[in-house]
Length: 109
Length: 110
Image 1 (tube, rainbow over the protein chains, first blue to last red):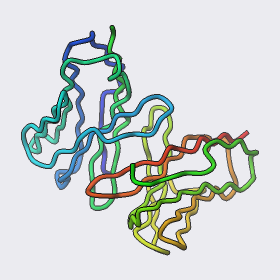
Image 2 (image 1 turned 30 degrees about the vertical axis):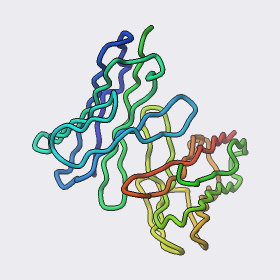
Image 3 (image 1 turned 90 degrees about the horizontal axis):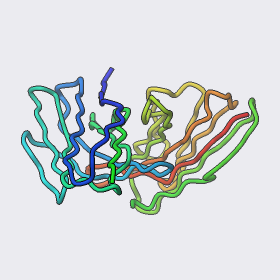
């Protein structure tokens, strides 16, 4: 069974702070990792993906991957109230995506 | 947006009735998926398709069937709806190394 784990939260951070979201996965054969944001009542939308060990930055978002530890994280710098949402980690196995349960983030004004 | 639309968007049905949810895509995606999303469980794969008439089961396929007679349409059928199938259903398509979702179908079984 391929599993993806996330802390369900809620994670609360003040506006302007860095939010750190974490994800672990069970299968060392995984090669592709994704972060999705989902607002309440909406469908998930892709924030970014990462394939290689290390950091990948896109605007205020940074994804970090450590394959040896089977760990992927998402940092959100200068958090805004509009970042309040559930963040889903996903791992691609072959042609199928396995999702974690999501972490609910609340950014307090 | 990968050109994915779902219908109906909202439905209330009675226990024991069959229900069909439709996913329509306009961009010739080969791989398509049906997920359900429930509190505490996240997104769970019901069925997927890798082409016309090629489908396979996901982790929560019991009580569901799918069909794909055309590239653009992927249908999910609840053969005899139960209250445990009350959920939000998302269709998705694999495109450019990631997965894109439709807007969701909210199903309530009473």
